[in-house]
Length: 162
Image (cartoon, rainbow, N blue to C red; front, side, top):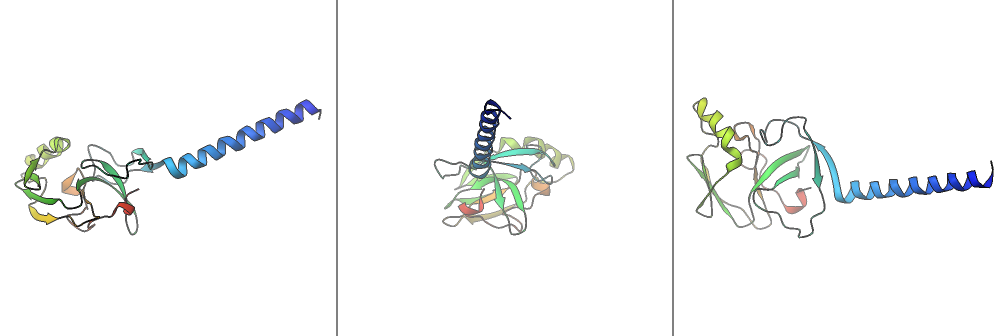
């Protein structure tokens, strides 16, 4: 092997090493692939749909309505943030009230129609519930089939959110 071939192999090796390093950093700290399991977020997200999650949050704040990945005890969950720390959450007649003010959930329109067709409410009445400091209240978009803060998963802290 001549010296030009050696230089070329060395150059390719160095490029490959750098590319793998960048991919590792991006995968570890910036983005992560997930596969949605279950119907709790339909029609927004579907079972077996592949999504990329942004793990890089400059503000370290979460907004109401954001879709997040929650680290559960045994598995991860995809849910929507409904209540922020200190919020009072109440559901009456399929209407969400946050701190006493009606909160329109336009992303539920399709599921609400389906619930009405079967003679049911999409979300059963509950509350008022006050979200404690440093906790978040989450629900799935497909409320008829979602395990969430209302019915078993409980509330989550910032470090539980991917």
